[in-house]
Amino acid sequence: MVAQRCLRPAPVFDEPALRRAFEAAGVKEVHLGAVWQHVISSAGAGRPEDAPGLPGSAREVLQRHFAAVTSSVQEVKTSADGSTSKLLIRLQDGLQVEAVIMRYDASAGRYAGGPRPGGPRATLCVSSQVGCKMGCTFCATGTMGLLGDLAAGEIVEQLFHASQICPIRNVVFMGMGEPLNNYSAVVAAVRTLTAPRAFGLSPSHVTVSTVGVIPRMLTLPADLPGVRLALSLHAPTQALRATLVPAARAYPLDRLMAALDAYQAASGGGVLVEYVMLDGVNDREEDAAALGALLRGRDVFVNLIPYNPAAAADTYRPSSALSLGYFQHVLRDGHGLHATVRQEMGQDIAGACGQLAAQAAGPQRTPDIEDIASP
Image (cartoon, rainbow, N blue to C red; front, side, top):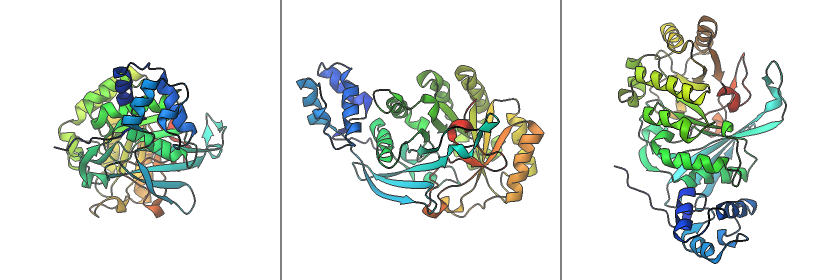
């Protein structure tokens, strides 16, 4: 069992902890936003207790128990083409996580048949855990095991750090960890990310990825309305999926598809299906046909991900360009599914972390994550 992490001081962006502390001290909820705005506007240099308009009881709570920022950026690596920056973030207790900024020019894509308005934008891929217990055999994070859950404030701090580098439009929970296994912290973090009094992101610009934690998939639409879901599928049959994604033994494919249908009925939104392409393992002609049959008629967008051999031990090889193209053809032309091949970004800085998401490319370019996961 993973030891419970105890943060002292606590992150001021940890909304549940800050709310409880304010309630215990008789401080009104309205002061939460004032504290966050002060920290954000000062780029972390301002002390939370110095936020204007706070009562003395709030200042005392903040001074004794909270810090503006509890983590630090140890290293930033930017790819040669400038499209990707990887942040190595050191947590208060010495553990480390990664966050990745992916930049793209929205005007280079097309939307609804015409040029998409807008210019440069950035998506941030955040981690929700240190390591991961899901054990996906092709994932670098899966080889680490689970070292600890991140607090909600530590998740939010990844956006805070990234925002010092460039403005962030989208956040995707596709970094280290299984977000739905740290459910309460992820829900609290997303609520802070989207709160107008904090970072003010649109819920539709936040995507949460999962390998299929069914009970949490079913509660997500009510807890985070408007937020998008990505499902890491990686195999079209239960037998194959169980070898690649050990969690599939607890959450079998038939139940997962039923949960996907229930999620879509409750949320009214489409789902991004992620599929890592492994040479000779899940990229065969029969795999394409089986995946097409499994997903046909569902409101999904399939993102085919070329395997990064540096992401784990060299057990697998990436699919050939021919296999990728044929697989996409079967899904699109044979089964009427939206399908793209992901363009890997930041390979020269080892930019792929766990379930790292990037923009799709190929014959049908998808300019950013909000289009990939849109209904």
